[in-house]
Length: 288
Image 1 (cartoon, rainbow, N blue to C red):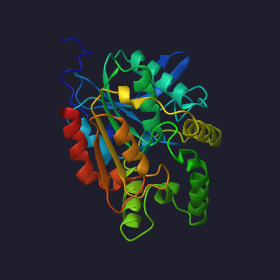
Image 2 (cartoon, helix red, strand yellow):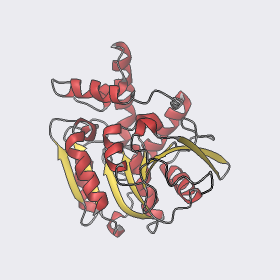
Image 3 (cartoon, helix red, strand yellow):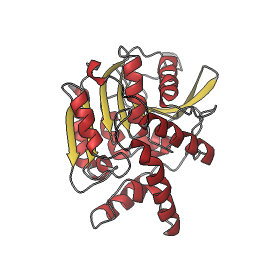
Image 4 (spheres, rainbow, N blue to C red):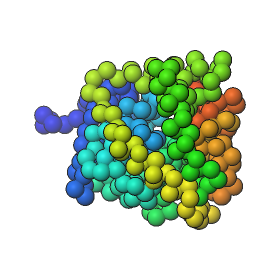
C-alpha cells in the first residue's frame, strides 16, 4: 500500500477539526474546508453576509457531515480567499460555479443561508444541471420586497452591538427576548469551538461591497424561479428582521413542490436557534 493512500484515515465529521484547503481557479485562490465521507454528491455550503469559514454553526454542519461529503468555502475576496469581492450577486454565483468546477464536481447539493441563498438561486437559474437539491434558509428571491432594506438594518444593529460590546449577530440573527438572547449567546459560543487555523475576518471594504450587491439584488427584476425542478427546502424564523420572513413564503410559492419550515419566536438565525429540530430535517431532506 502506498504511503499516500488515505482510505484508512478516519473520516473527520467535526467541523471544528475540518482541514483547511485551497484551490486555484480563474486567478483566485479559494479557501475551503471539507469533512465527512468522500464519494457521492457533496453538499456545498454557501455562507451569509460578512461571514467566513468560521461562521458555520457546527450543530448544523456536523449532522450533515456524518453521512455526506461537506464543503464550505470563502467566496472571492472574503476570509482567506484572494481577489476582490464582486459587487453583484450574479458575479458571486459565477465564482461559486468556478470554485465547484475547480474541485471537479459535476453535481452538488447546495445548503445556503441568507446572502448565500441569493447566490445559490442565481447559480441554479444559470446552471440548473449542476445542482441536485437546494436548501434555502434565511433568504429571499431576487427583487423581493424590502430586501434592499437589509443595509439599513445591518448598520443599525452593528451600532447597537458596538454600544453593548456584543457580537452583531446577536442582534441581527436573534430576537432580543427571553428565548432569543440565550440562543444568541450559545450560537456565538459554538462558533468559537474551532481553536486552530481560524479564518481571517472579512474586511470593512469587502463587507460594504457585499451590502451593495444585496441592495442591487433587492432592486432588480425577479428571476423566473418557476423553472426550478430541484427539490427545495426553505426555512426561516417567523420574525426575520434582515430578510423578512414573508420572503420565505414568497420563495415557497415561486418554487414548485418546495417545502417550507418556519420556526416560532425566532429571527434570521431561526435554524441556529432550533438546530436540534432543523438539523435532522435537513439531513433527511438531503438523504432522500
